[in-house]
Length: 271
Image 1 (cartoon, rainbow, N blue to C red):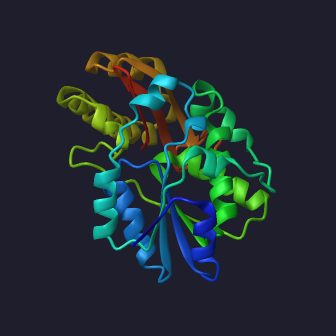
Image 2 (image 1 turned 90 degrees about the horizontal axis):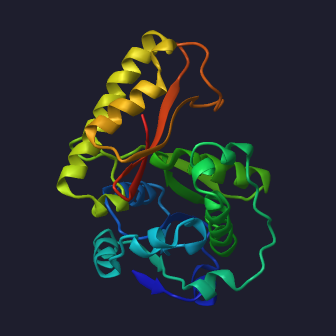
């Protein structure tokens, strides 16, 4: 395992490697990240993991400062998984060069998290675009818990004709149904139980909605979730998983998208 902190050293190190699988992270590694890394191992090339808490994708300074960090623990996990390269840039290293490709923000960026987190996806695409230009990976592995983010990254790659294939990986969940997330570390035991109730409730609602789309009543759902102990709900919406339009037929493959707060911790999911 090689730990690299400079983009110049990184590029020299990987210059002649054609098959790199890239997993971008902000650290606070959990079983979701581990599943991505294990999947990358099956692709028979080299695995490169970045750890960088990107300030440009936070629309709240306090959220950025409170984002869970534990680099020592992360490196132990990555060493155990026998990851080939770890890239640990600082702000200046990753943002001190001009990019050839301008970021492409699909119109879907204005919905869901795009409404409540102004500038978030621009920040995400900015950093991912930079990573792709530096690393030129054959694959980038992304979790579909962040469905909107993965979709927008894919659209950017296709629009800018970047020679990297996106591999979407399933959401890994705790035993109580809550999706693994670095932000879970900010939850109290009681808040973690509330998050579990939310997921179970949404799964049950999805069964009802599959029978009749009119069973989706966001006002009632929001009221029920707040009775569980949810502090705030940014959105709860239905979208077709492929067209990303509102489903008009119960036979469509759709997802329930949600962003909610437990005190000051914001969680997202799609069921």
